[in-house]
Structures are given as structure tokens and as C-alpha cells.
Image (cartoon, rainbow, N blue to C red; front, side, top):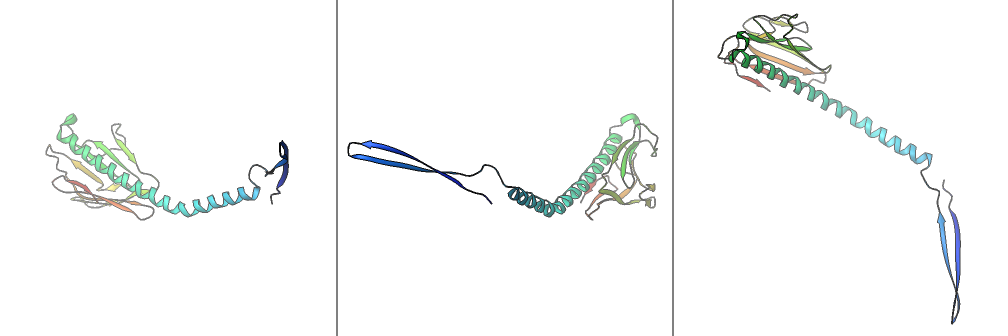
Amino acid sequence: MRTQVQSAECKVQRTPGGASALCTLHSALPAGFTVLEVLVVIAMIGAVALLAAPFLSTGLTTNDVSIAETEARDALREAQASVMSGRNNARFGVHFEGTAFVLFQGATYSVADPNNVTHQLTGRTEVTVVTLSPGGSCTLPAGTGNCDVHFANRRGMPTENGVITFTGDGGQARTVTINAAGMIDAN
């Protein structure tokens, strides 16, 4: 509770017709905020933050899935362009695992190759489906089996075609599709 302090100041003026008094009333409230006011504001900020947190988390996960899909598409296009340009006169491909994908050089993927370019996914996103043909199935998250897309000829056609799906922890999914002609698309 605030207490109000008042004071009055009066001035007397003498005029030819007599004297008049002019009084001014001053009100002095204490400066600053009370503890109760500060607590109410903190409680309001906390309530808004609690209401906004789920929406922000969903937005971050959706963004992570979209980034993973875009980076995978770019890695596939880089492998394709490297073969088409004759870079190092070698084959290139992309290997997929549950939490990463790797741009590699050579006929097969080798974990120990120092030229590998690894793209690590965030904790909220993972590769959930790799379906390529020909070649059978890919076992995730280990990335064993047919988990590689290879580009071997200068026309940019892949030796495998199919679908790679990225899924976020909230169920959001993005799919990269590569067809037999080498067209790489996402949806």
C-alpha cells in the first residue's frame, strides 16, 4: 500500500487593491515499484513463456528437418556434379545412416576415408527410411545394407534410385526422391 504525502506552499502577494494568497498543493509519491508489482510482472512473463514454449519447439524441429532435407539434396547434387565434371576421375556417392549422411569419393563408402564429408543431424532429426533400388534394404540407424546412392557416369545418372525420409521428434517428415534419370527432388 502506498501512502501519499502532501504539503502545501503558499505565497502572499501584495497588490494595490489588497493582498492575495496563492497556494500550491504538492503531492509526493514514493519513487519506484512495490515488491508486489514486480512479482506480478514476473508471473505474467513466466505464463507467456510457458504458453509459447511448445510452439517454439515445434518450429525448431520443423526447421531442423527442412535443413536436413536440403543438405542431403545438396550432397546428392554435389556427388552428381563431381562425377559429371570428372573430378579426380572418380565415382562419388552419399551414404545414409540414422543420425548422419556422408558425401564420399570412390566405388564404395569407407568410414576411414579422410575425404569424407559428414553431415551430422541434430538430436531432433533422423533418417528414418532409405528405400533404394536395385540393391535391397537399408538397416537404420546403423546404415548397413543398401544405404548408398552412387553416381558413376558422366551423364549424372545414379546407380540406385529411390526415397530417403528425414523425420523430426514431433513427427514432421521431409522426403528426398532421386529417380533413375538423376532428378533429385524434395517434398
